[in-house]
Amino acid sequence: MSSYKDWIRKIDIDIDYYSAFIKAWITFNAWYRSEYKEHTDREIIEKLKSNSNRFKGYIETLLDVNNNTDSAISFKKDLNNLQAALVSAAIVTQERMGVNKQISFSEIAVNNPKNTAEGDYRTTHYKIQRIKQKVITLVHRKNDPSVVYFQFEQDGYNEMELDVHADFCRLGTEQQGQCKAFYKEVCPYVIESVLSKDRNNNVIFISERSKVSRGVIEVLYLLRCSLMHGEVVPDNNSSEVYKYAYHVLAAILKKMI
Figure 1 (cartoon, rainbow, N blue to C red):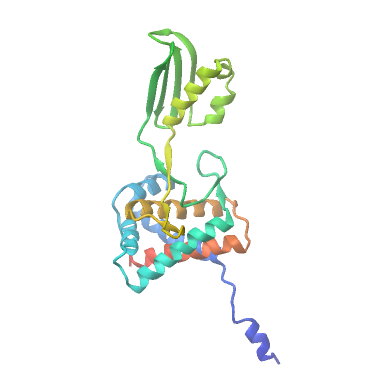
Figure 2: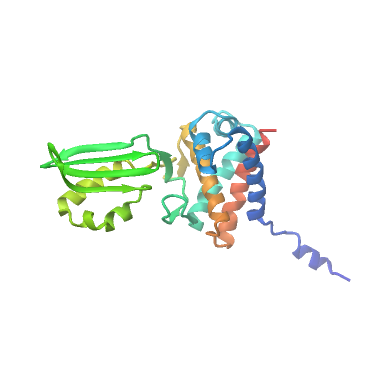
């Protein structure tokens, strides 16, 4: 016969928050697929971040400093806990450019509207164009386009691919540096932080709810990608991340009933 002590030891049930988060994401996926058809997940996420929609709107409602409902208080607490858990867990993803990046509210990727960068430096003219996915780099003599020093067309933005190109390596050090400076200007995304510090040096979220809401959407998506791509180490720290990510996502979804 089992002792009551055995039952006491089972009071604290370990919840599989990885599965709980994915279950919530499936619900979210079903909703946004019904709203945005014929788009990839990334394209839909960008639309959700940039445009007015119910999901983003509910996040901003819950973030309102004047919203003191139980659900808003819990949401803000879970969001703060998610931010702290991300720092401890250091979960990375290759979602952006195939390079390992730590998922963080201090580095939120936002679409870069600039797709052309060009200018002169000394005797050289530089022009970088991002046309849909392609990136075209052209370096030629100033006022004489017929004298081409470097020309390169890529299927996507990839600075490392540029660095190792044989013709790029033949450019002078100054030309390489100027070319890369213009190249960086057309990166498909720019980085912003949605975190700040209060008078006591505590980390807090900024007051601009529209920025924080798109940060929440981006972080939740990156956590989904990292988990589905097998990039997460299943330890206590990462479990804490998915615990609060689940609570944050579920709180928004429950508003959409």
